[in-house]
Length: 485
Image (cartoon, rainbow, N blue to C red; front, side, top):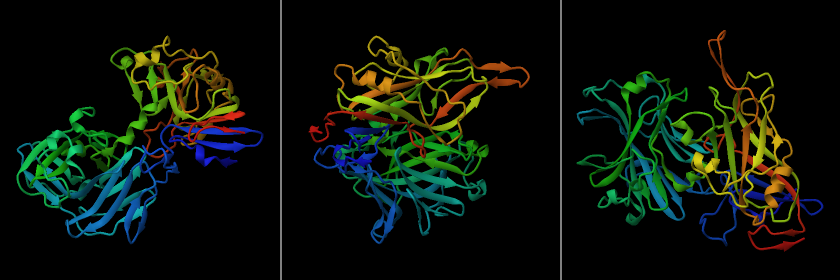
């Protein structure tokens, strides 16, 4: 099986099979990159997020955004400096301090960092003990963004505070710079942002508080966006984190804070990420869970994250997966098709009563959906009549599972007037049985039957993949025109 490299798209590959047959493999999220994604003449290349370390530094250039990392910049006085670029625009960051801050506005520096050798492993680089014994800093090149994580391995790593404990927070500080003031939020106008700085002294002025993910003031033009800061413990429990952009000495810094009161009940190690990312993380919106039978406020939401087929507490859920740039030409005969998911866990309490089905929207080019109202609009976005039963009896964590053949489901969409190579197709894995979650008096707990599968948001495992084999005499993949076979 040979890949037809000239017909690559951002999310899909085409393979040549014997007998004028082809395989289209479409992923949720990018599998190819262009350094300039708007340059249609630049060929698509395979994404490889592995960090390469040599005399030139630590870098990853084979991704939708590019990263170059310097162990230490003597001129700027900073260590672990990273420059990440998207569409030719650049932003530079470097960790400069770990502090305590309290409600009165007092601050105590825990550490401004020490010189340690970074450890590169796969798509991550870590400076161990850089902010004290048991306090690391590192970068990870992820499909979800460029993660910048402070890790505190045990509570004993943190010194006793010398400032008042009322409203005490642990704060990580990063210096920032960007290559053009025209791309910065208006709140950052007037700050000197052409280079990062290790000097976090001088008068401090608050510029932005990242309280809202969608606030326009948090976007750097079309290139960067500030998402709410994240903090979590070893058990995966989310901790409330604040993110402020401040000007100190006329230069911009990000200050990420976690309340010490929240750390007291956390399971260490605890991780903190300021989540300043390139725009491509928005690709996460094409797989989601729709909750069907629960009351407001939840019934108005589409829930991203792990895909859920049968939900809890008598709630039924549908898992929706929208595949973009599906490179199957109009008029193609679908020979076989399957959906691949990676199991994220499940329960099996129904004794085989539950049934699940796969079907598709009977829409030639299905748009993205962001609300339950859109998803439930079967007038504008009708479901196809074809469906295939699938609800695996076993569902082992982290294993791959391929659905039965769903060629009839895909054929129905490809045969719709207006379908063309490169269009988007939405599949749904939905609950179809009579059994629902119920309370077990003997176990004193709810019992359920469901299958979880990883979505795009998971940092490690593959999101859904659609594999389709088809026959076509006139192959119009659309990347470089039409070829006749």
